[in-house]
Length: 254
Image 1 (spheres, rainbow, N blue to C red):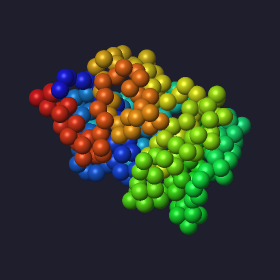
Image 2 (tube, helix red, strand yellow):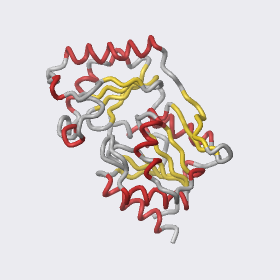
Image 3 (cartoon, rainbow, N blue to C red):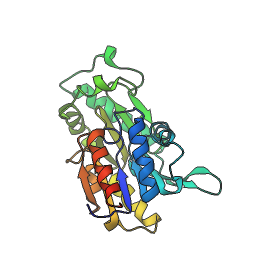
């Protein structure tokens, strides 16, 4: 494998099971990576969620100045300030209240038109999450068990059907599948392609030296826009394969 100076990861389905923290082994590997290269997480979640899932699992060996977060599908960027020892937003694009309401109403209308229904007994906590710069719809609720989520829409057909009823929103918003039951909605033009390009504009790094790793690199998947940047990429089947990719990257520095 060629030597990369930056590796950009999707989170759910790539580094960890949906909404779950990194395993001890994955946390150690990601921390090892930060000792060699820059590590970036780009995902649909809020920074607070990513901190719990990832940052808090990296231990004492992590080099925080080499770690970046692009929350809410790249609509914001967070970096570590070594002087203040705090995580700060570099940029953040918020949705207006009117835009949020239009998105939520559009999803509710799509659910009414869909050929399938969702049993309320299968929904655990809220289906809609306001992430500031993104609205996320989780069909079975934000905190349903991963093993239940993963079998609900394995071929993405249900969510693709919902998207087909939401095309009236596409003039203003970007609609992407996320996780195993989610639809992520941001302002149009703000997706993982945007986030990755903004990361490289903000830093002194070059995209030719970066690698993207994700599990949804297919049309409609929320990782697909990332590869439009021209960045090298590897598709993964899940955390186990991702660990193999990380080992390859680390070995290139031996």
